[in-house]
Amino acid sequence: MAKSAQAFRTISEAASELGVAQHVLRFWETKFSFVRPMKRAGGRRFYRPADIVVLATVRRLLHQEGYTIKGVQRLHREQGLKRLTLDGASGAEEREAPATSGAASRRTEAQAHVGHGGLQEALQELEAAKARLDGLLARP
Image (cartoon, rainbow, N blue to C red; front, side):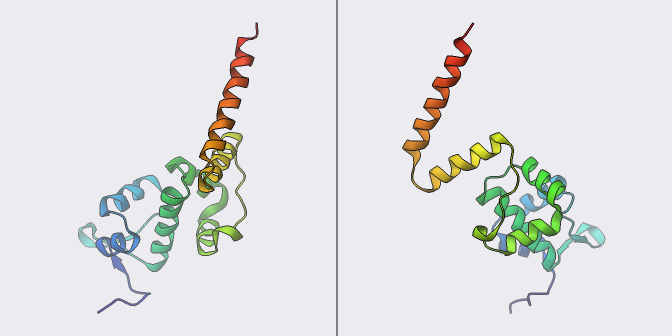
């Protein structure tokens, strides 16, 4: 018998639903202060439906969008949890792009090239940039 959408989940049920291992959920608790399942006597974790939404957002950011742990922490600091989970609920094409640093912006552009099959083009751009840097470093 399946649980209702509003039922609490154990760590094994949450991990199965999210497609990650249980130890990953425990690790995320140590890295993200906003991941806080209920704990019962003996330390048994119970995940509320809202917790599952938050964890799904973290999983998407880390595994699909290529953010680092520090990057997700920064997004949480800058945008707040509500904004992150709202972004996860809407389609990726509807989201506003977050303000990024130059390096993060270049990483996003490189990911776009990869996503569109432009590996060769991305490699050529990187080689051209390297050549420009080498030229600048060679100056007295």
